[in-house]
Length: 117
Length: 138
Length: 182
Image (cartoon, each protein chain N blue to C red):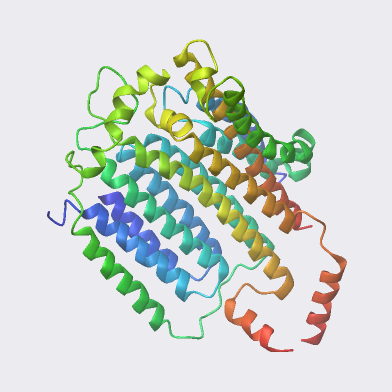
């Protein structure tokens, strides 16, 4: 258990924290969505990293190999990626509609406009 | 963008191969990396590429929005239909063993059909989303 | 390891830049780096999906949104101290969590011993499909994939309902009025 052996996990956590920070701290909605996708991709890394076996190969069965990486996280993340882009598209559609209604994509300005009338 | 000669020529050269690659990824997904998701996204990317280079209307003439919108539920129907076919042939829902006389062939057939359904839905949805986003601005 | 460090650098760039166009392009670069890392980790299918979905479709959609909205992020008015504390506390908890994880690439990890040996040993005899990822996706976990296809269908439907129709007349009048008031 050295730092080098767990470098993957450290970077994954770093990405996760940065993504979370962007989502919470930034008021711009497009930037929030970018932060959300960073958070999401860090989760992909978190799932795939433990599935790797050193000396293993991609999980496509062939008699020349005997050690394979774990296919189960791959399947789960495959679905997660496609669902992720679907939710991203829905979020962007909402951003476009908000921009049409309020003429801004900054959270603070929207709150200010809601307080006006 | 429409006067970009190099982009247009290269785009015309590349597009058939992109579509061919999508089909390869779809049908070779059983043996190598690939499958319905990837193939659907690559096919949708080819259409989006065409729309960016030659304009949205040119793309809509080739791939009509109505067809693309119909593909979205069609894929889910194919997927669910495979499951119901399993029930009708005496198995459980999404049970592929009964689809052919040999259970292994049944599995192969089931996986193939399901991947086809996924391909149809994913490519249809991605293209539809792009069309609606691009058509919004005018 | 170099790739992972590059990814970390890219996220800092995304965090600091205020031009949204640059942010979106950096997001595309980030996705490509992620796809390469996944390839190194032997997840070929996932890598392919991430390259086409994350770097391709997402970037196009983001650019489309920027075209419809605005290109610059305004300067934040509040000091983001509370979000930083929240993020750091979460990060600390997660770091504590990793201390219990098995080392990287260790074949004795728990996740390699539950259902996975059965998938890998029997997949060829049971389904005739050598790619274990495809077989598990479409056959062993067929219900998952059905639900997931339905999610995509629903998202497509939602986008069509939100943006599909013509721009309502009342809305644009409303916008004009708001512009005139300012």
